[in-house]
Image 1: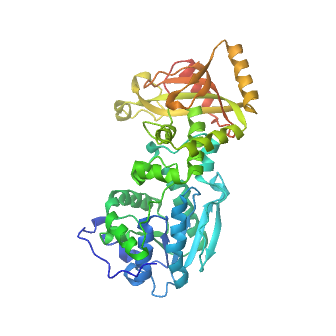
Image 2: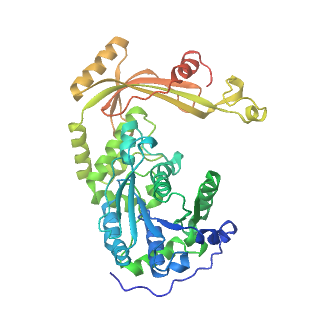
Image 3: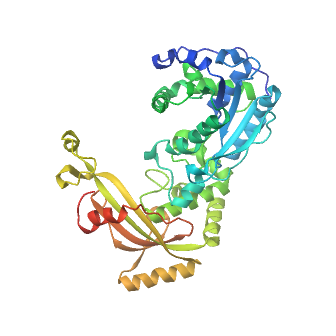
Length: 439
Protein backbone atom coordinates (compact mmCIF):
# COMPACT_ATOMS: atom_id res chain seq x y z
CA UNK A 1 0.00 0.00 0.00
CA UNK A 2 1.24 3.52 -0.79
CA UNK A 3 2.47 5.85 1.95
CA UNK A 4 -0.27 7.78 3.72
CA UNK A 5 -1.01 11.19 2.29
CA UNK A 6 -0.63 14.43 4.17
CA UNK A 7 -3.44 16.64 5.55
CA UNK A 8 -6.68 16.70 3.60
CA UNK A 9 -7.10 19.53 1.16
CA UNK A 10 -10.16 21.71 1.71
CA UNK A 11 -11.80 23.03 -1.44
CA UNK A 12 -13.52 26.38 -1.89
CA UNK A 13 -16.94 24.89 -2.56
CA UNK A 14 -19.29 26.36 0.07
CA UNK A 15 -21.42 24.11 2.26
CA UNK A 16 -25.04 24.17 0.99
CA UNK A 17 -27.48 25.93 3.32
CA UNK A 18 -29.60 22.80 3.78
CA UNK A 19 -26.55 20.91 5.08
CA UNK A 20 -24.92 23.65 7.15
CA UNK A 21 -26.45 22.79 10.51
CA UNK A 22 -26.93 19.07 9.92
CA UNK A 23 -23.62 17.98 11.42
CA UNK A 24 -24.61 18.81 15.00
CA UNK A 25 -27.59 16.47 14.82
CA UNK A 26 -25.42 13.79 13.31
CA UNK A 27 -22.87 14.08 16.12
CA UNK A 28 -25.62 13.37 18.64
CA UNK A 29 -26.40 9.99 17.05
CA UNK A 30 -25.59 6.91 19.15
CA UNK A 31 -24.28 4.87 16.21
CA UNK A 32 -22.65 6.12 13.00
CA UNK A 33 -22.65 3.95 9.90
CA UNK A 34 -20.74 4.45 6.67
CA UNK A 35 -22.86 3.30 3.74
CA UNK A 36 -19.97 1.81 1.78
CA UNK A 37 -21.05 1.47 -1.85
CA UNK A 38 -17.60 0.15 -2.96
CA UNK A 39 -16.94 3.19 -5.16
CA UNK A 40 -14.27 5.86 -4.96
CA UNK A 41 -16.39 8.36 -3.00
CA UNK A 42 -17.45 6.16 -0.08
CA UNK A 43 -14.05 4.43 -0.04
CA UNK A 44 -12.31 7.78 0.16
CA UNK A 45 -14.65 8.90 2.92
CA UNK A 46 -13.88 5.68 4.79
CA UNK A 47 -10.13 6.35 4.64
CA UNK A 48 -10.69 9.92 5.84
CA UNK A 49 -12.70 8.72 8.84
CA UNK A 50 -9.97 6.23 9.76
CA UNK A 51 -7.39 9.04 9.61
CA UNK A 52 -9.38 11.56 11.66
CA UNK A 53 -12.56 10.11 13.22
CA UNK A 54 -13.38 13.13 15.41
CA UNK A 55 -13.52 15.34 12.34
CA UNK A 56 -16.47 13.28 11.11
CA UNK A 57 -18.30 12.93 14.41
CA UNK A 58 -16.97 9.42 15.14
CA UNK A 59 -15.51 8.37 18.50
CA UNK A 60 -11.68 8.23 18.57
CA UNK A 61 -11.78 4.50 19.38
CA UNK A 62 -14.41 3.84 16.65
CA UNK A 63 -16.70 2.28 19.26
CA UNK A 64 -19.74 3.94 17.65
CA UNK A 65 -18.73 3.31 14.02
CA UNK A 66 -19.88 0.54 11.64
CA UNK A 67 -19.16 0.07 7.92
CA UNK A 68 -22.14 -1.46 6.09
CA UNK A 69 -22.32 -2.64 2.45
CA UNK A 70 -25.38 -3.83 0.56
CA UNK A 71 -24.27 -6.57 -1.84
CA UNK A 72 -26.05 -6.45 -5.20
CA UNK A 73 -24.05 -9.29 -6.75
CA UNK A 74 -23.00 -7.83 -10.10
CA UNK A 75 -19.96 -5.66 -9.42
CA UNK A 76 -16.91 -5.95 -11.64
CA UNK A 77 -14.26 -8.14 -10.06
CA UNK A 78 -11.63 -5.39 -9.97
CA UNK A 79 -13.90 -3.39 -7.64
CA UNK A 80 -14.25 -6.40 -5.33
CA UNK A 81 -10.50 -7.00 -5.23
CA UNK A 82 -9.65 -3.34 -4.67
CA UNK A 83 -12.00 -3.28 -1.68
CA UNK A 84 -10.41 -6.38 -0.15
CA UNK A 85 -6.83 -5.29 -0.77
CA UNK A 86 -6.98 -1.53 -0.23
CA UNK A 87 -9.77 -0.87 2.26
CA UNK A 88 -10.46 -3.98 4.32
CA UNK A 89 -6.79 -4.08 5.34
CA UNK A 90 -7.22 -0.78 7.21
CA UNK A 91 -10.57 -1.79 8.68
CA UNK A 92 -8.90 -4.91 10.10
CA UNK A 93 -6.05 -2.86 11.55
CA UNK A 94 -8.52 -0.66 13.45
CA UNK A 95 -10.91 -3.49 14.36
CA UNK A 96 -13.82 -1.74 12.65
CA UNK A 97 -17.12 -3.59 12.68
CA UNK A 98 -17.80 -4.40 9.02
CA UNK A 99 -21.15 -5.74 7.85
CA UNK A 100 -22.35 -7.08 4.49
CA UNK A 101 -26.07 -7.51 3.84
CA UNK A 102 -28.27 -8.60 0.97
CA UNK A 103 -31.95 -8.84 0.21
CA UNK A 104 -33.27 -12.25 1.21
CA UNK A 105 -35.59 -12.72 -1.75
CA UNK A 106 -37.81 -11.03 -4.32
CA UNK A 107 -40.29 -9.66 -1.78
CA UNK A 108 -39.62 -7.30 1.09
CA UNK A 109 -41.31 -9.85 3.30
CA UNK A 110 -38.25 -12.05 2.60
CA UNK A 111 -36.21 -9.60 4.66
CA UNK A 112 -32.43 -9.30 4.56
CA UNK A 113 -29.57 -11.73 5.07
CA UNK A 114 -26.44 -10.71 6.97
CA UNK A 115 -23.64 -12.24 4.90
CA UNK A 116 -20.86 -11.12 7.21
CA UNK A 117 -20.55 -9.22 10.50
CA UNK A 118 -16.97 -9.06 11.70
CA UNK A 119 -14.16 -6.85 13.00
CA UNK A 120 -11.66 -8.79 10.90
CA UNK A 121 -12.96 -8.38 7.32
CA UNK A 122 -11.01 -10.17 4.62
CA UNK A 123 -13.49 -11.15 1.90
CA UNK A 124 -16.14 -9.18 0.08
CA UNK A 125 -19.06 -11.44 -0.79
CA UNK A 126 -19.67 -11.60 -4.54
CA UNK A 127 -23.41 -12.15 -4.15
CA UNK A 128 -26.20 -12.82 -1.70
CA UNK A 129 -29.26 -15.05 -2.02
CA UNK A 130 -31.13 -12.52 -4.15
CA UNK A 131 -29.40 -10.30 -6.71
CA UNK A 132 -30.76 -7.38 -8.66
CA UNK A 133 -30.02 -9.51 -11.76
CA UNK A 134 -32.27 -12.26 -10.38
CA UNK A 135 -35.14 -9.79 -10.15
CA UNK A 136 -34.60 -8.59 -13.71
CA UNK A 137 -34.45 -12.15 -15.05
CA UNK A 138 -37.60 -13.15 -13.17
CA UNK A 139 -39.55 -10.18 -14.54
CA UNK A 140 -38.06 -10.17 -18.04
CA UNK A 141 -36.85 -6.58 -17.73
CA UNK A 142 -33.70 -4.49 -17.63
CA UNK A 143 -33.07 -1.46 -15.42
CA UNK A 144 -34.23 1.66 -17.23
CA UNK A 145 -32.78 5.15 -17.27
CA UNK A 146 -36.35 6.43 -16.93
CA UNK A 147 -36.52 4.74 -13.54
CA UNK A 148 -33.71 6.90 -12.16
CA UNK A 149 -31.81 5.14 -9.38
CA UNK A 150 -34.85 3.13 -8.26
CA UNK A 151 -32.94 -0.17 -8.37
CA UNK A 152 -30.35 1.29 -6.01
CA UNK A 153 -33.09 2.46 -3.67
CA UNK A 154 -34.76 -0.97 -3.62
CA UNK A 155 -31.68 -3.17 -3.36
CA UNK A 156 -29.21 -0.95 -1.52
CA UNK A 157 -30.91 1.66 0.61
CA UNK A 158 -33.77 -0.57 1.71
CA UNK A 159 -31.38 -3.34 2.84
CA UNK A 160 -29.14 -0.84 4.64
CA UNK A 161 -32.08 0.81 6.40
CA UNK A 162 -33.52 -2.56 7.37
CA UNK A 163 -30.23 -3.66 8.91
CA UNK A 164 -29.89 -0.44 10.91
CA UNK A 165 -33.39 -0.78 12.33
CA UNK A 166 -32.86 -4.43 13.29
CA UNK A 167 -29.29 -4.14 14.58
CA UNK A 168 -29.69 -0.99 16.67
CA UNK A 169 -33.23 -0.98 18.10
CA UNK A 170 -33.99 2.16 20.06
CA UNK A 171 -30.72 3.83 19.07
CA UNK A 172 -30.34 7.05 17.13
CA UNK A 173 -28.44 6.00 13.97
CA UNK A 174 -26.43 8.48 11.95
CA UNK A 175 -25.58 7.64 8.36
CA UNK A 176 -22.50 8.90 6.55
CA UNK A 177 -23.22 8.99 2.82
CA UNK A 178 -20.44 9.42 0.25
CA UNK A 179 -22.04 11.83 -2.21
CA UNK A 180 -19.37 14.24 -3.44
CA UNK A 181 -19.71 17.99 -3.99
CA UNK A 182 -20.62 17.42 -7.66
CA UNK A 183 -23.71 15.51 -6.47
CA UNK A 184 -25.24 18.15 -4.20
CA UNK A 185 -28.56 18.11 -6.07
CA UNK A 186 -28.76 14.32 -5.86
CA UNK A 187 -27.99 14.45 -2.14
CA UNK A 188 -30.58 17.17 -1.51
CA UNK A 189 -33.25 15.08 -3.25
CA UNK A 190 -32.23 12.02 -1.24
CA UNK A 191 -32.26 14.08 1.94
CA UNK A 192 -35.76 15.40 1.21
CA UNK A 193 -36.99 11.82 0.78
CA UNK A 194 -35.34 10.82 4.05
CA UNK A 195 -36.98 13.73 5.87
CA UNK A 196 -40.40 12.64 4.60
CA UNK A 197 -39.92 9.20 6.14
CA UNK A 198 -39.61 10.73 9.63
CA UNK A 199 -37.52 7.76 10.71
CA UNK A 200 -34.81 7.58 13.34
CA UNK A 201 -31.85 8.17 11.02
CA UNK A 202 -29.68 11.29 10.95
CA UNK A 203 -27.83 11.86 7.68
CA UNK A 204 -24.56 13.61 6.94
CA UNK A 205 -22.86 14.17 3.59
CA UNK A 206 -19.27 14.99 4.66
CA UNK A 207 -17.76 15.25 1.16
CA UNK A 208 -20.33 17.89 0.23
CA UNK A 209 -20.12 19.62 3.60
CA UNK A 210 -16.35 19.98 3.23
CA UNK A 211 -16.29 20.60 -0.51
CA UNK A 212 -14.67 17.44 -1.92
CA UNK A 213 -15.59 17.03 -5.57
CA UNK A 214 -15.10 13.88 -7.66
CA UNK A 215 -11.63 14.76 -8.89
CA UNK A 216 -10.47 15.70 -5.39
CA UNK A 217 -11.67 12.49 -3.79
CA UNK A 218 -10.29 10.37 -6.64
CA UNK A 219 -6.89 12.03 -6.21
CA UNK A 220 -7.01 11.42 -2.46
CA UNK A 221 -7.84 7.72 -2.88
CA UNK A 222 -4.98 7.25 -5.33
CA UNK A 223 -2.60 8.84 -2.83
CA UNK A 224 -3.87 6.55 -0.07
CA UNK A 225 -3.93 3.28 -2.01
CA UNK A 226 -1.53 3.72 -4.92
CA UNK A 227 -4.19 2.71 -7.45
CA UNK A 228 -6.78 4.40 -9.63
CA UNK A 229 -10.10 3.31 -8.14
CA UNK A 230 -12.61 2.42 -10.84
CA UNK A 231 -16.22 3.43 -10.53
CA UNK A 232 -18.56 1.01 -8.80
CA UNK A 233 -21.70 -0.05 -10.66
CA UNK A 234 -23.49 -3.17 -11.87
CA UNK A 235 -22.23 -4.48 -15.19
CA UNK A 236 -25.72 -4.05 -16.72
CA UNK A 237 -26.32 -0.52 -15.40
CA UNK A 238 -28.11 1.62 -18.03
CA UNK A 239 -26.14 4.59 -16.70
CA UNK A 240 -22.80 2.98 -17.57
CA UNK A 241 -22.15 5.90 -19.90
CA UNK A 242 -22.28 8.10 -16.80
CA UNK A 243 -20.59 5.68 -14.39
CA UNK A 244 -17.72 5.36 -16.85
CA UNK A 245 -16.98 6.46 -20.38
CA UNK A 246 -18.21 4.15 -23.09
CA UNK A 247 -14.68 2.97 -24.02
CA UNK A 248 -13.86 2.29 -20.37
CA UNK A 249 -17.08 0.34 -19.87
CA UNK A 250 -16.51 -1.73 -23.02
CA UNK A 251 -12.96 -2.44 -21.87
CA UNK A 252 -14.31 -3.77 -18.56
CA UNK A 253 -16.80 -5.99 -20.39
CA UNK A 254 -13.99 -7.29 -22.59
CA UNK A 255 -12.00 -8.09 -19.47
CA UNK A 256 -14.95 -9.98 -17.95
CA UNK A 257 -16.70 -11.65 -20.93
CA UNK A 258 -18.80 -13.92 -18.68
CA UNK A 259 -20.47 -10.81 -17.26
CA UNK A 260 -21.02 -9.39 -20.74
CA UNK A 261 -22.63 -12.66 -21.84
CA UNK A 262 -24.97 -12.69 -18.85
CA UNK A 263 -25.90 -9.06 -19.53
CA UNK A 264 -26.63 -9.92 -23.16
CA UNK A 265 -28.96 -12.69 -21.98
CA UNK A 266 -30.71 -10.26 -19.65
CA UNK A 267 -31.27 -7.84 -22.52
CA UNK A 268 -32.38 -10.60 -24.91
CA UNK A 269 -35.11 -11.79 -22.52
CA UNK A 270 -36.25 -8.23 -21.86
CA UNK A 271 -36.49 -7.36 -25.55
CA UNK A 272 -38.46 -10.54 -26.21
CA UNK A 273 -41.27 -9.14 -24.08
CA UNK A 274 -40.77 -5.54 -25.18
CA UNK A 275 -38.82 -4.77 -28.34
CA UNK A 276 -38.52 -1.16 -27.15
CA UNK A 277 -36.39 -2.10 -24.14
CA UNK A 278 -32.73 -2.41 -25.08
CA UNK A 279 -30.33 -1.85 -22.20
CA UNK A 280 -29.52 1.66 -23.39
CA UNK A 281 -31.99 4.31 -24.44
CA UNK A 282 -31.08 4.42 -28.12
CA UNK A 283 -29.27 1.16 -28.80
CA UNK A 284 -28.69 -2.32 -27.50
CA UNK A 285 -25.81 -3.75 -25.54
CA UNK A 286 -25.65 -6.43 -28.24
CA UNK A 287 -24.86 -3.81 -30.88
CA UNK A 288 -22.18 -2.20 -28.74
CA UNK A 289 -20.50 -5.51 -27.94
CA UNK A 290 -20.74 -6.63 -31.59
CA UNK A 291 -19.33 -3.35 -32.88
CA UNK A 292 -16.47 -3.75 -30.41
CA UNK A 293 -15.84 -7.26 -31.78
CA UNK A 294 -15.99 -8.95 -28.38
CA UNK A 295 -16.07 -12.44 -29.83
CA UNK A 296 -15.58 -14.27 -26.53
CA UNK A 297 -18.55 -12.54 -24.93
CA UNK A 298 -20.70 -13.18 -28.02
CA UNK A 299 -19.67 -16.84 -28.03
CA UNK A 300 -20.52 -17.26 -24.35
CA UNK A 301 -23.87 -15.54 -24.94
CA UNK A 302 -24.66 -17.96 -27.78
CA UNK A 303 -23.77 -20.86 -25.49
CA UNK A 304 -26.15 -19.56 -22.81
CA UNK A 305 -28.97 -19.50 -25.38
CA UNK A 306 -28.11 -23.04 -26.52
CA UNK A 307 -28.11 -24.36 -22.95
CA UNK A 308 -31.34 -22.67 -21.90
CA UNK A 309 -34.82 -24.12 -21.61
CA UNK A 310 -37.20 -22.14 -23.79
CA UNK A 311 -40.79 -21.00 -23.53
CA UNK A 312 -43.59 -19.41 -25.49
CA UNK A 313 -45.02 -16.37 -23.69
CA UNK A 314 -48.35 -14.70 -24.30
CA UNK A 315 -47.85 -10.96 -23.79
CA UNK A 316 -50.53 -8.30 -23.62
CA UNK A 317 -49.70 -4.68 -22.92
CA UNK A 318 -52.14 -1.78 -22.58
CA UNK A 319 -50.80 1.76 -22.90
CA UNK A 320 -52.76 4.49 -21.19
CA UNK A 321 -52.60 8.07 -22.47
CA UNK A 322 -51.34 10.79 -20.14
CA UNK A 323 -53.81 13.11 -18.45
CA UNK A 324 -53.98 16.65 -19.72
CA UNK A 325 -53.12 19.46 -17.32
CA UNK A 326 -56.68 20.73 -17.60
CA UNK A 327 -57.97 17.44 -16.19
CA UNK A 328 -55.94 17.94 -13.04
CA UNK A 329 -56.76 21.65 -12.81
CA UNK A 330 -60.44 20.81 -12.96
CA UNK A 331 -59.87 18.39 -10.07
CA UNK A 332 -61.13 15.35 -11.93
CA UNK A 333 -60.46 12.06 -10.09
CA UNK A 334 -57.09 10.39 -10.58
CA UNK A 335 -58.76 7.54 -12.49
CA UNK A 336 -60.65 9.89 -14.83
CA UNK A 337 -61.66 8.01 -18.01
CA UNK A 338 -62.89 10.98 -20.08
CA UNK A 339 -61.32 10.71 -23.53
CA UNK A 340 -61.03 14.49 -23.86
CA UNK A 341 -58.97 14.59 -20.65
CA UNK A 342 -56.14 12.51 -22.14
CA UNK A 343 -53.43 13.23 -24.68
CA UNK A 344 -52.82 10.21 -26.92
CA UNK A 345 -49.42 11.59 -27.96
CA UNK A 346 -48.07 11.21 -24.41
CA UNK A 347 -47.65 7.95 -22.51
CA UNK A 348 -49.56 7.40 -19.29
CA UNK A 349 -49.62 4.25 -17.19
CA UNK A 350 -48.61 0.99 -18.87
CA UNK A 351 -50.19 -2.33 -17.87
CA UNK A 352 -48.68 -5.73 -18.73
CA UNK A 353 -49.79 -9.32 -18.61
CA UNK A 354 -47.34 -12.20 -19.19
CA UNK A 355 -48.46 -15.82 -19.32
CA UNK A 356 -46.29 -18.87 -20.07
CA UNK A 357 -47.89 -21.07 -22.73
CA UNK A 358 -45.32 -23.90 -22.79
CA UNK A 359 -41.80 -24.63 -21.55
CA UNK A 360 -39.35 -27.13 -23.02
CA UNK A 361 -36.53 -27.39 -25.51
CA UNK A 362 -36.23 -24.67 -28.11
CA UNK A 363 -37.54 -27.00 -30.82
CA UNK A 364 -40.60 -27.93 -28.74
CA UNK A 365 -41.37 -24.28 -27.94
CA UNK A 366 -40.89 -23.29 -31.58
CA UNK A 367 -43.31 -26.03 -32.71
CA UNK A 368 -45.93 -24.69 -30.30
CA UNK A 369 -45.46 -21.17 -31.64
CA UNK A 370 -45.90 -22.50 -35.19
CA UNK A 371 -49.09 -24.32 -34.14
CA UNK A 372 -50.45 -21.10 -32.64
CA UNK A 373 -49.63 -19.30 -35.89
CA UNK A 374 -51.64 -21.86 -37.83
CA UNK A 375 -54.53 -21.58 -35.37
CA UNK A 376 -54.57 -17.78 -35.54
CA UNK A 377 -53.90 -17.72 -39.29
CA UNK A 378 -51.00 -15.33 -38.78
CA UNK A 379 -47.31 -15.70 -39.71
CA UNK A 380 -44.47 -15.96 -37.22
CA UNK A 381 -42.34 -12.86 -37.71
CA UNK A 382 -38.59 -12.61 -37.19
CA UNK A 383 -37.83 -9.30 -35.50
CA UNK A 384 -34.26 -8.25 -36.31
CA UNK A 385 -34.35 -4.95 -34.40
CA UNK A 386 -30.97 -4.39 -32.74
CA UNK A 387 -29.74 -7.58 -34.51
CA UNK A 388 -31.25 -9.89 -31.87
CA UNK A 389 -33.73 -11.93 -33.94
CA UNK A 390 -36.81 -12.65 -31.81
CA UNK A 391 -39.60 -14.85 -33.20
CA UNK A 392 -43.09 -13.43 -32.59
CA UNK A 393 -46.68 -14.15 -33.55
CA UNK A 394 -48.28 -10.69 -33.46
CA UNK A 395 -52.04 -10.46 -32.90
CA UNK A 396 -52.28 -6.73 -32.24
CA UNK A 397 -49.61 -4.19 -33.18
CA UNK A 398 -49.35 -0.83 -31.43
CA UNK A 399 -48.34 2.19 -33.53
CA UNK A 400 -45.22 3.95 -32.30
CA UNK A 401 -45.81 7.02 -30.13
CA UNK A 402 -49.56 6.52 -29.94
CA UNK A 403 -51.14 5.82 -26.56
CA UNK A 404 -54.58 4.81 -25.36
CA UNK A 405 -54.04 1.61 -27.33
CA UNK A 406 -52.69 -1.92 -26.86
CA UNK A 407 -50.52 -4.71 -28.25
CA UNK A 408 -50.72 -8.49 -28.05
CA UNK A 409 -48.36 -11.22 -29.23
CA UNK A 410 -46.78 -14.60 -28.56
CA UNK A 411 -42.98 -14.76 -28.41
CA UNK A 412 -40.26 -17.43 -28.21
CA UNK A 413 -37.66 -16.73 -25.51
CA UNK A 414 -35.57 -18.46 -22.81
CA UNK A 415 -37.70 -19.82 -19.98
CA UNK A 416 -37.80 -18.49 -16.45
CA UNK A 417 -39.83 -15.29 -16.74
CA UNK A 418 -42.62 -15.47 -14.21
CA UNK A 419 -46.28 -15.07 -15.06
CA UNK A 420 -47.44 -11.68 -13.93
CA UNK A 421 -50.78 -9.94 -14.14
CA UNK A 422 -52.47 -7.60 -11.70
CA UNK A 423 -56.06 -8.47 -10.68
CA UNK A 424 -57.32 -5.30 -12.37
CA UNK A 425 -55.60 -6.01 -15.69
CA UNK A 426 -58.49 -7.65 -17.53
CA UNK A 427 -60.73 -4.67 -16.83
CA UNK A 428 -58.07 -2.26 -18.02
CA UNK A 429 -57.42 -4.37 -21.11
CA UNK A 430 -61.11 -4.38 -21.91
CA UNK A 431 -61.36 -0.60 -21.66
CA UNK A 432 -58.29 0.11 -23.79
CA UNK A 433 -58.03 -2.77 -26.23
CA UNK A 434 -61.59 -3.89 -26.73
CA UNK A 435 -63.64 -0.74 -26.17
CA UNK A 436 -61.05 1.74 -27.40
CA UNK A 437 -61.25 3.88 -24.29
CA UNK A 438 -58.53 5.61 -22.29
CA UNK A 439 -57.44 4.16 -18.93
